[in-house]
Image (cartoon, rainbow, N blue to C red; front, side, top):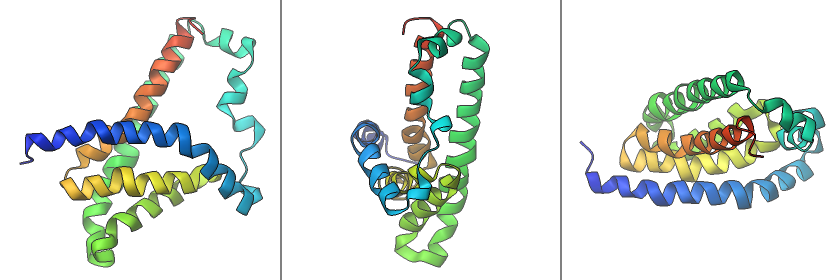
Length: 168
């Protein structure tokens, strides 16, 4: 049983994750792509580029099915696909191979998992190591990783809701 006071650690972890997303993702991705230019984000994959046009934003107004699809996808990807796999299943079993550095190996593996988005692999690995894998290991609960990692999905759901409601 986890001491209830430990849950207060989630607040700074969520805030640190948001700060890392806003302040560090861009510079880390630019550095990573400068080392390996082939890892640059293709123009057609850029959500920001897509939403730059008023026509694209207008298409999302009233697209409730798209919002529901995103929420279902976010739940299955973040909670089941990533956190329960990496922190719930793999992290506890990695200690046998990696010892006290299992959380670092787990975060690196999580970064490699994002090979489909190579421009963000390094940033994903860094965030997974320090903001998700370590707290999950330290507090011995996959809920830490699930909640911290899901903050990103909740944030994007709110932004998408604004677009669906026509507020943007």
